[in-house]
Image (cartoon, rainbow, N blue to C red):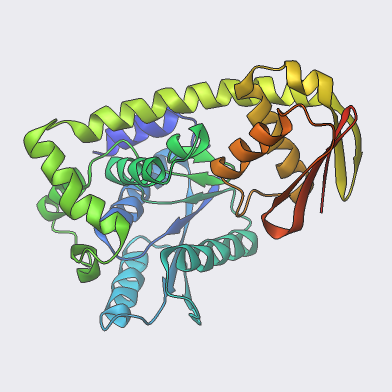
Amino acid sequence: MRKKVLHYINTNELISSGETVVCGISGGPDSVMLGSVLYELAKPLDLSLVFAHVNYGLREEADDDEALVRELAKKCSAPCFVSHASVKKKDEASLRSLRFAFFKEVQKKTDAKSIALGHTADDLVETFLLFLFRGSGLKGLSSIAPKRDAIVRPLLFLKKQEIIDHLNTQNIPFATDKTNQKSMYTRNKIRNDLLPRIKESINPNIVKTLETASKHIALDYDYLQTQAHASLTNVQTRISPHAIELAYGKWKKLHPALQLHVLRLAIQLLKKDLTDIGATHLLAAQKTLGRSKNAQTILLPQGLRIIKKHDRIRLSF
C-alpha cells in the first residue's frame, strides 16, 4: 500500500521532499489511513507531519474520536492540534468551512506547505453525482482534484473498502461515524442507496467509470479555463476594484462555451470567489446578454449587477 501511495504522490507531484504537511485527521478510516501511510513515508520523503483534528462535539463519540486521533499522533510522533469548534450551523457546508479554516490556521502556525486530506475514489464519485444532480457545469463535474492550491489528496485513487481492509489487516484502529449509515443527507443517500443499486443492476465498476469520466471533464475544463483567461484579456476594456467592463462585440463573437467561462472569470476576478453564483445564473446572464435589445440589466446574488449598454458589458457590485 505504501508503494502505491508513494507512486500516486510522485505521479501527481503532490508533496515535495523535505516539506511540512498538515494532515486533517477525523479518526475515520480514510484519515487514519492517511496519517498512517504518510508516517510510513515520512523518512523516505523527509516529511514533517502535523495532525489537525476538529471536535465539533455533535456526537456522543466525539471525545472518543479525539482520543483516538491523539493516540495516533503519538504513535506517529506528530504534533497534534485540536479545535473544539463552536458550531452554529450543522449543515455539511458550514462544518466543512470550520474544518478548512482550522486546517489553514494550523498550516500558518507550522509553516506547512501542504494540507493533506483523506478523500477517496468513493468521495470523488459521490461529489460528481451531487454536482450532476444540481445541474453543475464542468467545474463541478471535475469533482475532487488530487491537488488544488495547498490541498493534496494522496488517497484519491483508493476505494474506501480497500482502505478498511488494509486497516483491519494491519490491526490499525479507526472510528466509525454511525451517521454515515443514515440517509439523512443527500450524500449519504447516494452512498448508501443509489450507488449500491447501480453496482448491482447497471455497472459493478461504476466508481472507476465515473472516476475516469471526472478526469476527462477536468482536463476539458482546464483547457477551457486556459482559453478563457486569454479571451478575457482580449475582451476586457476597463477594470477597477468594484467594476469590470467588457467589449460586447468581442465577447459576442466568442464560442458560447467561452462566453460562459469569460463571464465566470470576470465575476471571480471582481468578487474574489464564486459563492452563490452557479451555472444557472451564468446561463441566464448569457441568454439575456445575447438578446438584441440595447440596454439590459441582470441582477445576480450578493448585489452583483451585469449591465449591457451600447457596446459594453459592465459587471459591478
